[in-house]
Image (cartoon, rainbow, N blue to C red; front, top):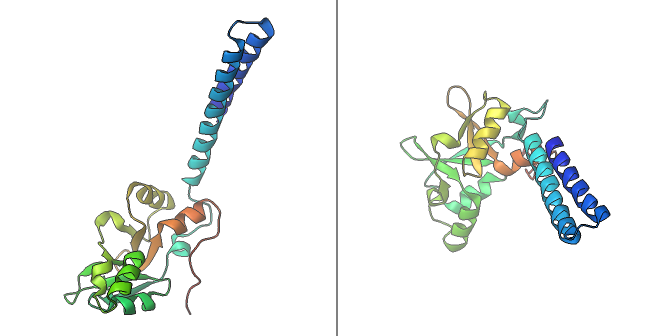
Length: 188
């Protein structure tokens, strides 16, 4: 930010010097310098804000951000899986005990509108290694993983691999920017 401010100041001083000295290109110089200085300051400010958002806030615990998790059979009707989810993350498990994926609520709502008795597995987002977070990971490691992976939800597991919750990208983004989460209140 400081370097960007110096560059912007230098551009403005150079433009004003052109005006004061009656330079032939003074108006062009002024226009170009003002616009360039604005871009430099805007970019530097944005980079500073982005850097601050990438830092895990003191006192924030991953457990505060994860939504409770519910395990349902993958063959459950999508309509039932949606109503059971009630703001929780849903892990869909096949009969052989293997996780089929996390219920994607948007896809599930579309499928339920067309065919409410369809298996919920058809609305599952696959669980991949990069979409699994350990509850014991540091906050900065969580931020880095979420930034690198194109997924809107992440399965959070304990050290034994048991699901303990689901982290939504929007909940993390809200916590890092200091806003209130869009997360619904927990059901008791």
